[in-house]
Amino acid sequence: AIVSEENYQPIPFDGPKSVPPIVSNWQKLVVRVYDISDVPSDGSPLTLLAEKSIKGEFNDARSFDETGILVTTSYLDTWQFATGLYRYNKEYCGLNATEYSKKASELAQNMTDEFATRLFEELELDDDCSNIFQISAMQSGSDEDSTDGNLLSNFVQISRFDMAADYSNQDIPMKRGGAFAPGYIRSIYSSQNSTFTFNSGYSYNPELGQWESSTFILGFDISGDPSPLAIAEIPGEPINQYAADLFDGHLRVATTKWHWWNDVSTTTNRIFVLKVPDETEGSKMNVAGFTKHLGKINESIFAVRYIGDKGYVVTFEQKDPFLVVDLSNYTDPHVVGELEIPGFSSYLHPIEIDGVQLMLGIGQHVNESDPWAGWDGVKISLFDITNSSNPIERTNFIDKNAYSNAQNDFKSFRYLAASQKLILPKSEYNYGAEGNFDGFVVYNITLDSITSSFEIQHASNDEIRFGCWYSAYMPPRSLVFKSKVMTILSHTVKSTDLYDGDEEWKLNLDDALGLNETECQPYFITGYID
Image 1: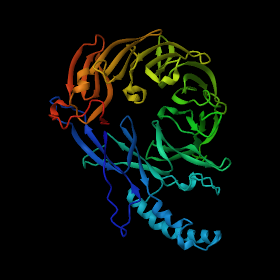
Image 2 (image 1 turned 180 degrees about the vertical axis):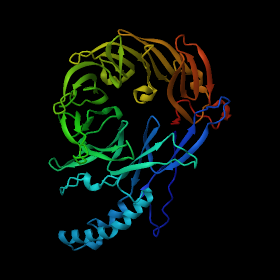
Image 3 (image 1 turned 90 degrees about the vertical axis):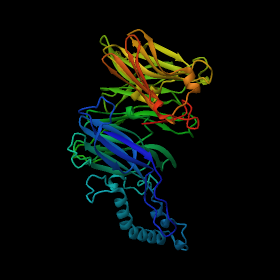
Image 4 (image 1 turned 45 degrees about the vertical axis):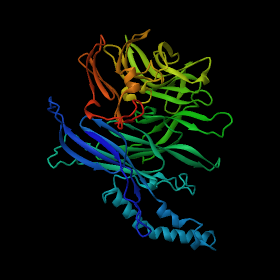
C-alpha cells in the first residue's frame, strides 16, 4: 500500500452569507493498494487494486503483517462557534458576571447541536461514536481549563485496513477511531496491538500562573477496530518516536520541558513511566514514576533508545552525556551509568558483535576546544553497554565537514549484522569547485574500529554545481539483495557490489524528462518526494 499526499486549496469562503467550513485540511491523502504478487519485468506499471481518499493531513503510517495503520489530523476552526461567547461582544454590555455567564451559556447550548452536526458531517464520522474518545474523559473536572478552551483544535484519526482484502469493488474498507485533541502531533508510537499519539501543546499551571509545554497522549487499541484505550498528560515534549516505548504494561516517555524564564536551567529532561490501564481501570494512564533531571543544566534530549528495562539517553548543549537509566522499578527510574564525550548522537541503534552488547550512535562532532564554533562533521560512535554502570565509547569515526541525513531521517540508516557493515547517506557541499559530494558511505564495524570501506557517489562535483535537475528529489534509502546494495538518492538509483564497491548499474530518473534551461533547478535546493 502507498499513501500519497498533495497540497490543495480548500473551497473559498464566499462572502458574509456563506458558512465557512469547520474542518481546515490543506492536504489531500489517497491510499492505493497494488498487486505485487507478480511484478512486471518489462517496466510496465503495477496493477492498481483499489484506492481511497482520506480526510486529514498525513502524520505517520505503520504496517504489521497484512495490516496497515494510518494516522491523520484534521484541524478545526472553532472560532465561529466561540466568537459570539466572548465578554467583549455588545450584547453582554451592562451585564454583571452572573448574567453574562448565564446568557453566554444559553447561546452556547443553542448552537451546540448544529455545530456538532456540521462537524461530524465534515469529518465524515459515522453516527456511532463508540470509537471516539469522550471529551469528558479528557478533562480534569476542575474549574481551571488547562487547554484554554483549545481541546477541539484538531481531530486525530487512526485508520486501519487489511492490505490482503478482496478488492473486487476497488474500494478499501477502513475502520476508524479518533479523538479531539489540543496541540499538534509530535510523534507516534505503535505496536501490533496499540498506537499512541503524542500531541505537543501548552497547559496552564495555575500555581505558577504561566503556560508550560505539555504532551497530550492518546492511546488506541488497534488489535481490531481502532478504539479508545488510554489518555494522559505529561510535562515537556518527546523528540521523536524513539522517545516512547511500551514494556510490560507500562509506557515509558522521555521529554524535554522548556522554561526560558528560569535563571538556573532552561530545560528539564525526564523519563516518565505510565501504567496503561486494563479494562477495569478506566482510561487514564497514571504516572507510576519519573526520573530526576537527565543531563546537565540547559541540556536537552537529542536521542533515546529503550532495551528491555533499560533506557539510553543522549543530552546535549556543549558536550554529549550518554546516560543509562534503570527502568526496572516503575516507581523509581534512575540513572545508573554516565559517559561524557564531545559532540552528540541524534540516533541510537542497538547491535551485538561477538556477544558484546553495543550501541551505534550517529550524530555530529563538536570541536571540544571551541564548542561554540559549531558542528563540524558526522560522528559515528560505538558504545559498549555491557556494564550499565560503566558505559564506554570503544571507538568512533569522524567525517569532517560532512552531513548525514540519517541523523534525522532514521529510515536512511542501515546496519547489516551478518557482515558488520553500516550504510549511511553522506552529503557535502562547500560552494567551491572541488569537494562536493552526494551519495552513501559503506563502513566496516568491529569491536574496536569503524573504518570507511568505500563511497557510492550519486552525483559528481560538476553535476552538483552545473547539472540540470528536476524540482523534486528522493530521500536517501538503501536496500541490499544478494550482496548488492541498491541506493536511492536525490535523482538517481544505483546498484553497487557490497564488498568491492564496483558499480553494477546507475539510473538517472531525470534523463527522460527532457528538461530545458528554464525548468532546471539546483541540485540541493529542491523538495522531497515522500
